[in-house]
Every structure is written in C-alpha cells, then in structure tokens.
Amino acid sequence: MGNNKGFTLLEVIVSVVIITVIAATVSPNFLKFKNEFDLTSAYNIMAGDFKLVQNLSLNKSEMYILGSYQKVYYGIEILNSSSYRNIITNADYNFLRQYDEDIILSKNNSINLEGREEFTDLKYIIFKSNGKPEFMDSTKNIIEYKGGKKFFIVSSKAKLEKAIEFNNMTGKIIYDRE
Image 1 (cartoon, rainbow, N blue to C red):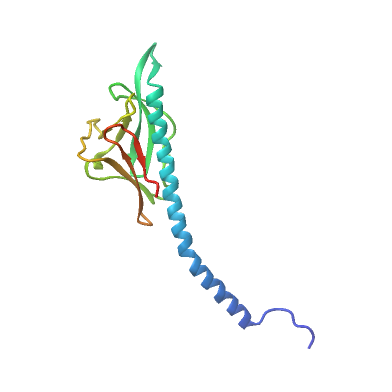
Image 2 (cartoon, rainbow, N blue to C red; image 1 turned 30 degrees about the vertical axis):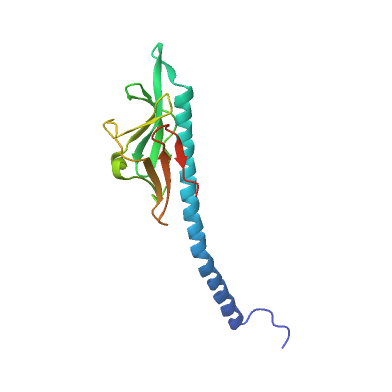
C-alpha cells in the first residue's frame, strides 16, 4: 500500500473533543465579558449624556424662540426601562424639542434603567441653569427625596449594576468607577 493521506477516525474524534473542551471553557468567560462590556458601554453613554445636558444648562440657558429669547432647561426624559432621550424644556418644564435621537441602551432589553425607592416613578431629570437637577414624575411633579439621588443601570443577564448619583447640595454627578 502506498502513501495514505488523511486522518484516522481516532484522530478526528480526539480533535473534536479537544475543541469542545476549549469552547466549553472559553464560552462562559466570553459571555461574562460581553455582559460587562454591554453594561459599561450603556453606562458610559448615559453618563456622557448627563454631562452634556448639565453643561448645556450651565452654558446655554437661553434660546431664541418665537421672536424672543426664552429661558430653557436641558434634561433627560426616560421613555421606558431601556431607552431615553435628551430634551429641551421651557422654564415651566413644557417640552420644546428633542435634542437628539432616542437612545436605546440595549436592543435585547438586557440593559435597563432602574429607579429605586423615591425614583420608581422617575420620568424626567431636568437640569436648571445652576446645574442642579430636578427629578420629576410623568405629570411633572417634583419627586422629593430623602437620601442621595441615585438610580441604576442594570444588566438583567449578568446581575450587574452601575449607579449614577447626584450630590444633594451641588448637583454634581457622581459616577460609579468600578
């Protein structure tokens, strides 16, 4: 018999077993990394939007509307548990316009916004011209809070969360850096 080229059945089976073991070892670590990455990405996007609307409120508190300059506030409207948008309101908190497109934190709803305690009815976070936020429900009633103003971005798949907190005195945003 001449020169046989190819693999024996035993060699193929051993190769498949080795690849399966490697895949089984790597897969959970990859999924954990992906869930952490998704949470961190959503958190960083929202943190950037908070900085944006707060800075706009501090630096661009008037807008030319209907023939005159009017006082405006910038804020965030929470649309549902996984999306929000940046908005501009007048001094009476009436919606003037959307600042940019709706932001969806997760296409498969694995990343959610979660208010706790006083913030379960949170709908609007409006930054006034001094940079301090007002927290409001869907009827634009100001939500009174007892402690620190905090809400969470949560990964439902990995049971992970990151908090965004607001200083009661200064309005400064405190980001979770873990």
